[in-house]
Each structure stands twice: as C-alpha cells, then as structure tokens.
Image 1 (cartoon, helix red, strand yellow):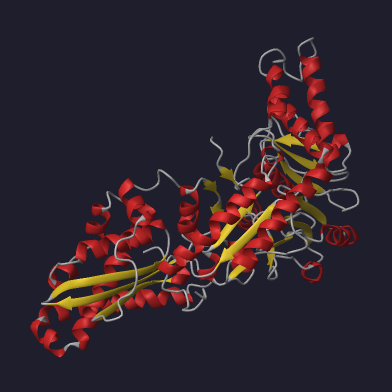
Image 2 (spheres, rainbow over the protein chains, first blue to last red; image 1 turned 180 degrees about the vertical axis):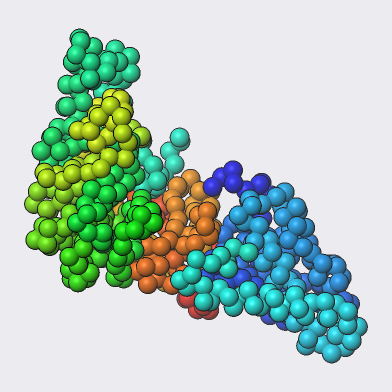
Length: 165
Length: 392
C-alpha cells in the first residue's frame, strides 16, 4: 500500500479534518453504499449562505477517508453556491492525485456534500427561494446520486460494476 | 526489512537460506542439462531425481508420479485441462466449488468455452464443500472433481479423504490443490484417494517459479506444453534445475519438523483469534474454528473497511492483507467470503492473517496490542457503527 497514495492523501487519512457529527445541522448528505465498500455522511451548518461548519463520517478505504476530509476542508467557509460546484477533479487535484481505480471515491465525497446542500434548501423555504437556480440544478444531480446509492443494494450476484462508477 | 511484524505469509514468504544454499551450485558448477549423457548431465539428473523424491515424500506419493512445473497455477491448468481433454470422449462434466482459487475457477471457465459442463457447488458458511452435494451432482458424464485441500483464504480443511473415496468408488478423477495445506498438515495421496495434486514451491519456503503436480497411477493427461518430452512427456522444456532442487530441499525441511512447527503455528493462531474475539466487539472469525490450517486466521471487524485497516496497521509496522474490494482490481470483495454468505459490507472488513516459519509469539502480542485501538478509531469515523458499541 505505501506508494499507492500521495503524501497529501496519507496526511488526510492519518489526520482527518472535520471528522465527526454535527448535532445541530442544517443539511445531512449521504452517498455510496457499504455494499460497494464505501459510505459517506456529511453534515453542514449554514450561516449567511456560507458553509459555517461541516463534519463527516466515512466507512471506506484510505482514499474514501482522505477525499471526505478534503471535501470538508475545501467547502468550509465557501458560499453554498461555490461549495456545490466542488467536483471530483477538484478533490483529486487538491490531494495531489488519486490512483485511477480510486477516482470514484472522490466523486462520492463531492456527491455527499451536494446532497447535504440540497437537503438544506429543501428544508428551508426562504433559502430555497433565494437559491432557485441552484435548487433546480441540484435536483436531478441528487436524484442520480440516490439512484446510485440504491443500486448497490441489489449488487448481489451480477457481473455489473455498479460500484465502480 | 526491519523488525516489522509480517503476517502476510499467504501473499509471499522468504526462501529459506538452507534452500538457497542447496540451489546455488546448480546455477554455476552444476549447470548441465539433466538429459545430457556426459559427465555434466549425470549429477544434475541425480539432483532432480532426489528433489522428486523429497517432494513425493511430503504427500506420501511414489517418486515416479511427481512432475515439476512452473508453479501451482500451471499445475492446476495441466491437471484440469489435461485430464478433461484426455477424457472428453468419456464425458464432459466437471465438478468444483464456488469457493476455489481463481487458478481453478478460471481454468474451469476456460473449459466451458471448449464445451465442457462445469457444476460449481456452493460452500457452507464455514467454507466446507459437502460430499453429499458432490455425490448428487455426479452424472455418468462426470470425469473430474477438482478442489482445494484447504481453502487458501479462510483456511477451512475439507474432508478430502471422504470425497476421495467417493470419487474412487465412482471412477471419477480427483484433483486437489494442496497449496496452503502441504507441509502444514499431513497429506497422503494414497489414503486420500487423490489422482492429481498441485504444489507450489514458494508456499513451502522454496523459490518462486517452481511447482509440482502429482499424476497418479493410470492417470493420463494431454500436455499443455509440447516440445522435447521432459517430465514424462507432460511438461516439455529444459528443467528449472535450481528451482527443482530448491523445492525438493524445501519439502524435506518442512516434512522434518511438521508436527512441532504446526503445533507452534496453531499456538500463535489460537492466541490471536481467542484474544481478539474477546477484546473487540462485533469481531468474527471467517472459516472453521476447528478444521483450520495451523497458519491461518481470517477475521472481520464489522463497520470498518479492510484497506483503511491495513493502512493503519502498516503505519505501526504490521503487514497484513485484506480481501476488501478496495484493494482488488475489480472492486469486488472476496468471492469466497461472499459464497460463505457473509454480507458484502462485512466482507469488505476482512483481514487475512497468515503465520510462517519466522513468525513469533512477540509478533502476535504486538498485533494484539495494536489492533483493538485501530479498529476503535476507524469505528469512530464510520457512520455504520451503532451507538453504544463501546461501553465507555
């Protein structure tokens, strides 16, 4: 395993930033499926339309933990609009790269954050009115993430690679 | 390597120095071809025959029935394909189990493309293959049963003798992959009614790149490699003499201290398993507790993922491996654990622990000291951990 990951990945794996739960949160996003070997939870607290606080919990490999940690670091303090734009590429680049087979992990971390923001908008009518365009943009993306999340459950016997995307 | 704790003997093990010493003269001084009739051939031929005898003794075989190959994967290929192609006229049905090593499963899959029919029997929750199920699956078309002596991943030792008796009674050839079992538990091809048996040198503390196949009396095979007709015409190509000599020496050394060494391995295995099951909540042993290879412990710790576990162990100089999907090329967890009915998310958390000749009780103690804390830390990070798992 050593040598597979960059120093940055190992640093975030060994010393994960913002690990834990938020008791008082505005949005909780989940992504992945334990069946596939990874599940991420991201909690956000929003103040003045910015990510004021963010925490994560992750079941998964080294890359899954490091990408979760990195996403929270990238998102903290950002406006919700900018936080929602964080892509798998941003996460992987901030970590100095990820092995090809682990790229899907970086997707999951960014996905969980998008779901958390969407959940906040869904709950908060006023925020939803302020971020109409963002809500509309996130709606199909979140539906897609949820579909992938559920797909893992009947991953059972097939040859399919529903876990690998 | 420094004094790290190495518990990954199934992935790789050192060649014993005594083995290397035995091999060295066959690179330089005794470089002759065993087929040569002149002075350079004779001693080499004798060394190869001595190695054949040493390997034969390890499995209770007659010397003449051993042939050398490049490793267990080749042995499995030669045994299964060689027999199937030879007996295709008699029948085209093969029986194996879903829990086998890929060098059996993928050979069977390849034969399906040639028109053979393969029954992949299920394994139970401890990875046992049922003799009754084999008997039920047999048809007049069945020509071969192929399976491992002991499961290489979870260490479960099969009831080989009973299955061998059944095959012998039904006149079906019986191939056994003895790779992690040979040299750790007594094997007797005659008493076990085994017709074909695969061995790997590198699993006997011998060099990599060498293996053997026992091809019993009356068993004919179609060779995979045609050429000069070495090894009873079953495996052409100039013999890997240093490798063969090394494998022979390795087999001799293993056989000499098998009873005491196996007891020592079991002591380490049992201490590790019993302590961890007691100390770590939601921990489980994979495979049989009693019919288990002396060197194998395979455990899983719910709510955490194997790769994260081995990275953490690596940080404290402990080398292990996992059957987690995340370390594989396919992102699929172990097919053995899945076939045992272990849920996917649990299969991701399995640790493969294998001891060997240079493992010590201090290694076990070190592992037992470090692991519970690492598991606890990862569980604190996991959203799957139920609240109150640790009462503090």
